[in-house]
Image 1 (cartoon, rainbow, N blue to C red):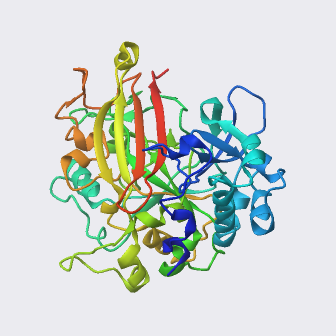
Image 2: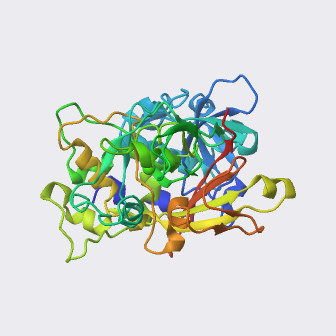
Length: 440
Ligand code: CA
């Protein structure tokens, strides 16, 4: 059994914390979760530093480092967590991640001797602002939902929706990391070259078919040297954790530019991550079997393993909501758009990592892999408006009577994620949200 699939005392569903809010039903951040972010008090000029969520609080890891409560590997790990970028901590690898998780779990448990000192290291989440949790050197976006690939393929290429390589290659492209921002970073509607189907020439104009993509972001911990590969069974030892990821997409720009080399300006104007990274260790109880139907091509040997078959997938619920400017003004709740699960992914995280490195490409601490839009098998599980509106031909009706085919200025897209199953404590991802501003 690998580190990423093994359950230990930190997953015990009976554990409770002296931070009372962590024990509430449906809390995203119980003591079994312990996700990482980089934060400071909002509006202050404090340095950004690492934090771990517990209930509605954050354990300030810079304060915890100096608390005298920790020792050994956990203290060495904390020595790397007071930075505004967690790359050095992520590079330490699974034994350091596990040691710090266990030490924090013990210190936060009901009855712990650490309570009086550690309670001095808490900052309320509603007083915090976040930055990116690490320096994302490189970002690769995969395309792992066959349901998304097929329905988008039908819209762009009606007679040839799924290209023949899809079932053999975990398809991806190298994205741009400079435009990845943290939840709450609003952005202007992009402009670009757009050519209407009946026009003879393109024009430069604000995007009219602005969309979101519901993805998860996979953060690499310790990487590999250039020229080395990461085999499938040790792949997840290199994965620090998973966040929510909105890969904003300009469909009209995309339609004109994407052939022959793939996505470019349709994708690199904004992408948004949730502040919290849920560690692979916290996700261990929610792993599930990965299937490849017998009628489908079976993976090549470097993408195949018994461990991947048994526990390669993650059952992470992924929900998208839309809050329009009118809803906000009227104090109405956001409208539900879709709900799916990462378990439907055609390729697993381990297969993505093994494939990415099979040619010797080096992954580095803090690199991010986008999963690709996670659409499930039914229409209600579609992870983009392109699919929900059937390419803009069908309106999506919202709870307050408004309708959309694509996003309008003032729209806020909110994504949430959580894991839940019998015999385990429910854990949540928090949310990722951002608002579309008008083009210049
Ligand atoms: Ca994408």
